[in-house]
Image 1: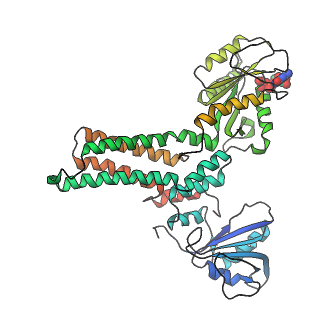
Image 2: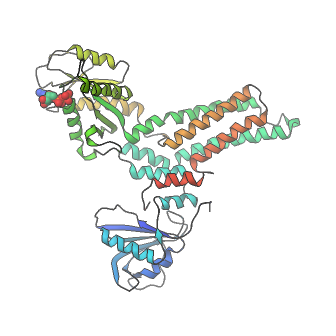
Image 3: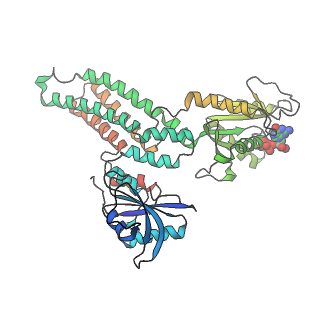
Length: 451
Ligand code: GDP
């Protein structure tokens, strides 16, 4: 048991809080079985329950009144999610029943679980490491198939193994350096520092590659930031609506934004997209419009993909060309809209669509897919999806680079090992070795109650 461990018995609703046929109430801790024995009467009557077996029966309050007709399972430690005794009660859905079931458990010795406390216990009891615990939370929140796949890999320990491997290597170097400090006469036995430099370059490369996946991680988690730009009335809003319409089922709310900011998450051929409609870009606009215009230029500049909409039913204007100039160097698709009308513009590499009839949208989606799915976005391989890991990797790389610079400039070995030790400790933090309670609390509070 690690520090910070509490072993009182906790209980909370584990299933979603809306109306449902069945709700799952979960309880974990040393007294879980005892509490269950006080409130649950299996049918037929039994003196003790077998582990991992589902029982039907009645849940009763302290006055002997029936609370609900339920199914219960007891999972004795250590074969449970938390490695403690865990009880799951399947009761009728609905807020009133769930509240009464929980109240009955609390009156008999359990206490309300904090957010993420079940997963925190799984971590503190050594069933999963911290990177896996974070993956549990990400899996619950995953909105796209890509996000789900990337996280599942982390949950099975992919990232953790990579981090543990890196730690082992650093530990090996440290051991050799310590040896040569303690026994300078056995220099030939100590690892040659040149070897550390060589192996170190390989490790830095690996960790830098891992750090570089953070961009994909962001894309997978939140979507590729994509903006629709173009002069007024070319059909930007119509295009936005057409794209969203096709995908109504998976349109989701983005934290921190509201519908009127016109940013929506949508999945186009498996590519998660964060789509923003911008004010029309127009020269000589009045002041209010100017603000909108400069915002849309800014948005376009931070976006990873720009859809530049041009009205194909009227000749190209200087404004269209100015927008093109503003987008110089940007990853973009030129969308020639209103192609249901007689086409007056011929542009190479532009995709012809009609936001009105839906013609050409499939082609546009295939282009988006081609840009991201085959190239950049893939859920295979280890992907960094947590800001905490990005921060730690930056720190780790900084320490390693410093250590290798020190080796190159023949700094005393005990000083070299200071930076290597820091890198070792910080790698440990990625998977939850020696992290402070404050860090743990922050991580687990982001969970929902019951997980
Ligand atoms: P925005 O100002 O760029 O957002 O343009 P809107 O989406 O508001 O569209 C401007 C006008 O063009 C509206 O009257 C739309 O109905 C019309 N429009 C948009 N897309 C098409 C299209 O594909 N075909 C036709 N014929 N009209 C369109």
